[in-house]
Length: 273
Ligand SMILES: NC(=O)C1=CN([C@@H]2O[C@H](COP(=O)(O)OP(=O)(O)OC[C@H]3O[C@@H](n4cnc5c(N)ncnc54)[C@H](OP(=O)(O)O)[C@@H]3O)[C@@H](O)[C@H]2O)C=CC1
Ligand SMILES: O=C(O)[C@@H]1CCC=N1
Image (cartoon, rainbow, N blue to C red; front, side, top):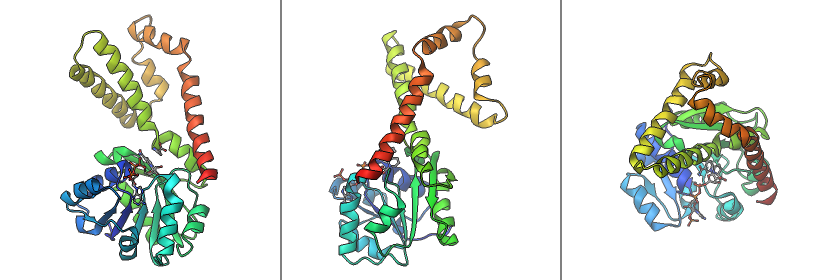
């Protein structure tokens, strides 16, 4: 993979996942700079061999790629500071991982930026099992498009979306969804420990079953999810008893409503920040 200097504006949960994932692939730490107001975070990154810089503008000016990893509600303030500091983005790739911040908004906030990619990653990038949706305008330089794709492919899977509006759905399907799975596993762990199992054993039983189920799905693309579920559900057996409770509480509708709420919040953020 081509190696460019990358400046992460924001060193929080998502940036950490991407950076640590990249370091595991051998990406040179000296080519990564992290900017964050938290000295503790900068100290942590420095221990990983990564460059740190408290001043966003200084770091951005020196980097080939500027990856914006601050909360959406801070994006305007952060970008306005970069613009006011006369950072010239005309020869840089700008990547934004912020939910709900459109390319048009980014271009308005960074007028000199002409090469911008939106990426919706997720935190499993930390263990090289991330899922990232990408969107860019058709005018994006192909070399930079390839770099952005290869960067996230180094820490998981990637897919390009044709329409920017699809990034809302990507956010619901993969950006936020690790939390859905963590919630289910959390509820299962609580139920199993309530039955007298210790936390560790309960966690082992659940995490390995979740991993196994995911691998069954990945390694059997020709088998539908419905069939995989049915193959566990012996007629009149224990699984059917559990699934009946899920059906009684209309889990499918609840999941649909949660996905739609995620999308609606992403759309709302697009109008707010
Ligand atoms: N978390 C996730 O799973 C995902 C997050 N994202 C997106 O990534 C972005 C970051 O989210 P997340 O990592 O969860 O948030 P975090 O709050 O964990 O990280 C943001 C970091 O930016 C820092 N920060 C605040 N102001 C500045 C500034 N002016 N300059 C530099 N850094 C600053 C924050 O410091 P402080 O804490 O002091 O404010 C914090 O350390 C968001 O836009 C989110 O939508 C996208 C996909 C998944
Ligand atoms: O919750 C959020 O807004 C961010 C974006 C997707 C996952 N976390």
